[in-house]
Image (tube, rainbow, N blue to C red):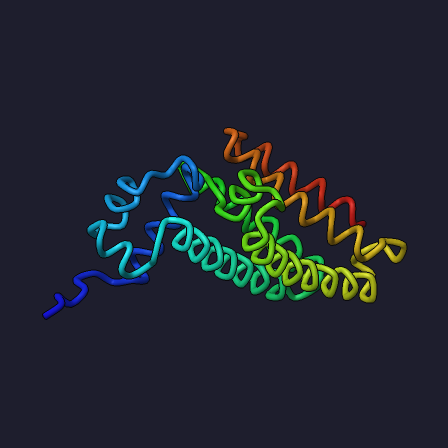
Amino acid sequence: MARPKEFDRDTALLRAIGIFSQHGYEGTSTAALVEAMGIGRQSLYATFGDKWTLYLEAVARYTADSIGAQVRTLNAGRTALDGIKAHLGHIVDQAIADPSPSCLGVSAICEFGSGNPELARVAERARQALHGALERRIAEGRADGSVAADIHLREAANFIESTLVGIKVAARGGASAAILRGIARMALRSLA
């Protein structure tokens, strides 16, 4: 009779996200995964498949959770510009709060680019969701006058997306809280 699983799948997946975020796919060994996840090697394979399948699931889960939280923050602001400011501030605050800031989505792009179709699909879905939310808020800002009327929606959304990635990479590289907040302020000024 097969032994029942003695671990929480979701907790194990979140732990895998943490280790993949810090070390990337290539830099994470199966032994490191098993240790971080608190499960046996056979349980890893039986539950998640191979390392690549686990990585894809980890990236998909991470990006869905991350983009969902970002869109909620973006939409929570009373005005469009308040929402964009809160969104940028949220990303900065997360980076400052983490002693080893990392982003599995950015890490996957840096490690694989767009060369892997499975990862590219996950990244594109996430990008489209965030981009659409940013365009909507920027359009609202143009309508309420908090964003300059001549701001191009797609270009502005692309710029804010790139700024978010830049903040994450700068934080990973050791940028101070003051530098990260300055980047966010400059991005907001670009919309005026």
